[in-house]
Length: 211
Length: 361
Image (cartoon, rainbow over all chains, first blue to last red; front, side, top):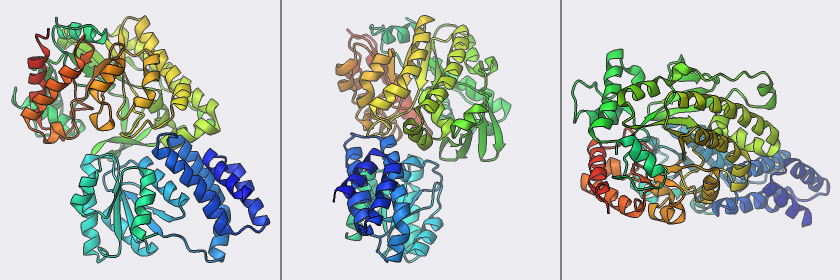
């Protein structure tokens, strides 16, 4: 449908007011909200994510696209809830204890939201118990750990251990990422997934959740 | 040649008597670790702010001594005295930016006083203070012209995002470009005034510190960089050149997509050329080594913390082979000598620089 394609294009261009108007217009015309979500908002974020990975667009373009996506999402969210449209899953995201950097983690959050996942963002400087309680409260099956510093990424192992001690080691998968993090490090600490960049994080979550 | 002549020759892409050696940044722990090999009476590693006056004096003297003992040709100074403690975990600078301390790294700007255009209307920027240049004064008195004096000055991107918040700055580039330009103008006016003060105080090399890339890519597009960053930092470069000093830039990360614009800006040198971010020394040398002095590339992420002195020596030998021909290379680590580096590897780097950098054909 042309209007859904246009929503995707406007998300990609970061035009939040246009996205709002188009989403409202689609709702008035009776377009299914799951189509607005998947063929409009998610499609737009997916496209910007691919371009981000290919260095065709950069962080500011992703930020305004995410803002536009969220503007559309706000409008359809009550309808999604009313119609009991299932989200693709919930992910708890946070920057680990001792680390105060958030932009990388935030971009992953936007990408996941833009791919149709619910995200519980517990912020920066997050201790293991905060990840665990957020996972319990939200029913998330994935936790995403972010770190910018070699000195703080070692704490990711502590979160893994704490999850096991809390009895969540089997049901909650852990994805790690951030500037100093590598696949080898992820393997070393027993993480289930490693995302080298924000767009890849969506692929990792899809794989871990089997969708 | 003395250290200053060596550095300035390399920055002019001419070949000095040996490859110059430089420390861009160094933390307390490696100063103490390296210093223990050449002096005694040093305290246990701790943060500068936790030291008493005698320990602070000893640390600074040791830093100078390291430069003298190992033949390091340039000394880096930076602003001090512009911050005040808010509470145990927070400090604020004279712009009103609040930083949160972490035991794991440098304080991170978390409180931003100019979030929107209205904030700017009532905002009074600070004026550069001569007293904040104390470290440069001490270095000048100590080295008496024998070493090149560098100064770390934040560029327009870093100063602006600290005032606005990084995500906010990036979004404002779309929503209100005029606001971003007005902030850029304000911080650049401050920087120009401080630069004049620094040159009057004997500065040799301005370092425009403007981290704007991660290991994959720049944070902003070349188009945005050209609009919001280049013109302002270029004013600093031009002022430096007009007044007879050199200007280099520092940014972590993969700068390849911005390299042409960095060249257009007129910098004399580029630091730190992170190997993990694709800034392969040989490739950068081939691309622009005739126009830009390359400063850095000895891996401080893995090699200096975890390698052996022999591996460090080999990395130095290779870096000199890759980049020193014809001049235009200053040996330096790939970011800073941070608390994780092995002091013995740092010493191996210094020795190898003198060993392989001297007597080149």
